[in-house]
Image (cartoon, rainbow, N blue to C red; front, top):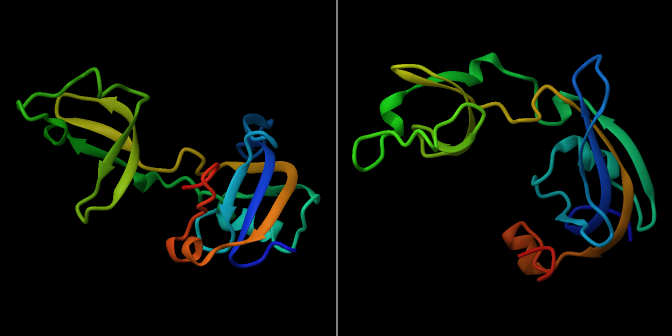
Length: 170
């Protein structure tokens, strides 16, 4: 079987990142014992990854680079915004400074109710400067690995948009 729409794919990989013109930096590794298992073609992965592995078979090895435009996007200066400090007030009307710390990633919600993650860059008297770019925005991604297995997704997996194998899925 080849990797195609609605296939459940199991891969192991090494991921390195780099800024344009800089050396690669190791980010993460999966293995046959702790693989990455996903439903192919449902929009759950970055487009560049799916494009590169489409049509592969179990046992195929891969090594490819993904530029920011096909990965997590370019770094957007407009995604760095000051959030009024009052937005972080707890039920008692005060801010828990053990939670709001420079460098921490915080779960947030925008005015339309969309969930997002923001990194605290700076805390001033009136605002918390946050970066809502994906942590890998603006970075080149370097994948190398192997396709371990492929199977057809079940109707439930397709309907729910994710794997239900009980081990690596839901």
